[in-house]
Amino acid sequence: MADKPAIPKGTRDFNPTESVRRNYIFDTVKRVFTLYGYAPIETPAMENLSTLLGKYGAEGDKLLFKILNSGDFLAGMDHREVTSSSANVAALKICEKGLRYDLTVPFARFVVQHQHELVFPFKRYQLQPVWRADRPQRGRYREFFQCDVDVVGSDSLLYELELLQIVDEVFKSFDTKVCIYINHRKILSGIAEMIGRTDLLTDITAAMDKLDRIGWEGVETELIARGLGQDAVEKVRPILLFRGGTEEKIALITQCLAGSATGMAGIEELKTLFEWIRQAGIGQEVVLDLSLARGLNYYTGAIFEVKALDYEMGSICGGGRYDNLTGIFGLPGISGVGISFGADRIYDVLLGLDKFPASTAHAPKVLFMNLGREESVFALSMLKQLRSSGIAGELYPEQVKMKKQFDYADKRGIPYVAIIGEGELKQAKVSLKELKQGQQQMLTPDELKKYLEKE
Image 1: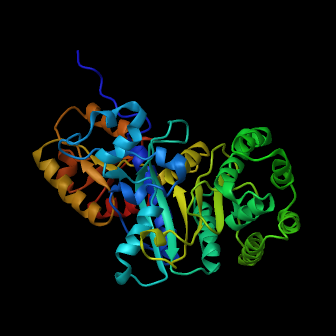
Image 2: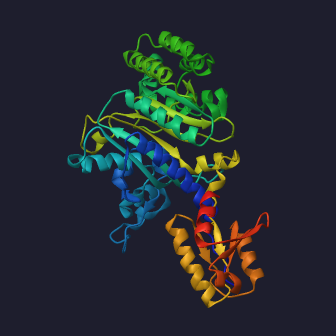
Image 3: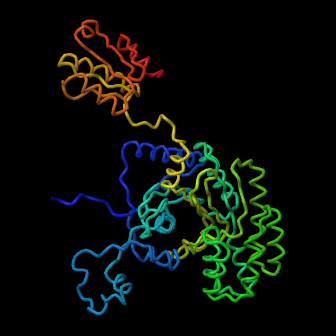
C-alpha cells in the first residue's frame, strides 16, 4: 500500500474557503496601499545567496533555505569539505542560490538594479511568499506570505507617519483593534553608548527584543551570557521595566541618554513622530516600547511592530527605517522605510475574532438543474446573461436525479437552485428555489437577473 502523500512541515494547503478569505486580506491591503500611491512589483522566489547572506544577522543566516546547484554539485570538492564539521563551508560551495527570507532585501537589490528606471521617492508594495527554515509552531510557518509596503529615496519622517496611517486604515477595514509599538534604533545605540558597550549592540538588542517572551530574568541572563557586566545590566534594567506613558518614557530616556548624541537624535525624531501621530488622528493605539529592537541588522531609525489587542498572537506587522540597505549593493545614500503585513498571522487573527465577512463565501449564487438537453440549452443562455451582470452561476454537468443535484448545491453552499422543466421551458421562465427557507417562485430571465442582483 502506497504511503499517504504529505507536504513539508511548516507549509500548508488552502481549500477554496481559505483561499477566498486570504484573497480578501490581499485585496484589502492592496486597496489601501494603492490609496496611498504605492505601486506593485514582484521579484523572483530565489535570489543569489550572496544577495541574502549577512543581511539578517547570524540567526537569520541560519534560517535561509539554500538551493543546491544543478548538475554534479559535488564535482571538484574535497571529501573533507562535506563532513558535518564543515557543513556551512560546503553549503556555500554547492549552493549559489537561496529562497528569499523576506521582501525587503530583494527590494533593495531591485532598486539598485533598476535605479535608472525609477522615479524617487519610489513607493512600492509587494505581496509574495517568503521562506524560513524555522521550527514550525502556531503562527510561525516555513512558507508564508508577506504584504510589504516601502518607500525609498527620502528620509522624511512623513513617510513613517504615512505607514502608520496605512496600518490604521487596514485594520479599520478589518474591524480589528491593534496596538502599534514604536521605538528607535538610535535610542538603542544610545543605550549601548551609555553602558560603554557599543561593540555589543547587536547582542544587547537581540536580548532586549525577547523581553515579552522570556521576561526580565531571562533577558538579564542572556545579557550576561553575551558579555555584559552586572553594572551594565543594572543600567539597562530601569529603562526596560519602566511602565509610564509615552511622555514619561521620553523624559526618562532623555535623562538617561543625555550624553549620547546618537540617542538624543533618535529621541527628537520620536518626539516629532508622536506629535504628528496625535495630529493625524490615528485611531489605533500607539505605544512607545523601549524594549522593541527588531532583530534585523539593517534597521537604522524608527522601528514598528503591530499586535492584535483582542486575540493572542505574536506581532502581525513589523518594519522600520533603513538608511544603508541599498549601499551594500553599490548604491549608497538611499534611505528607505517600510512595513510588512504578515498575511498568515492576520488570517489567524481574523478567523479567531470571526471578522471575515460572509461575502467571502466561494460558492456561486445559483445552480441550474440539468433536466434535459433543451432545458440545458435554455439554462446556458440564462447563465450567460447572469454572468455578464457579475452574478456567479453554474449548470450541473449531468442529467441525474434531482436529489443528487440538490445535495450538490447544499454541500457547496449555493443559496439558490434554478429549475427548468418542461413547463418552464414552454413559458420561457425558470422556477427559482431558495434552499435555506424553501421558498420558490417563477421568474422570467430578466426578473431572475434583477432578483439575484438585489440578493
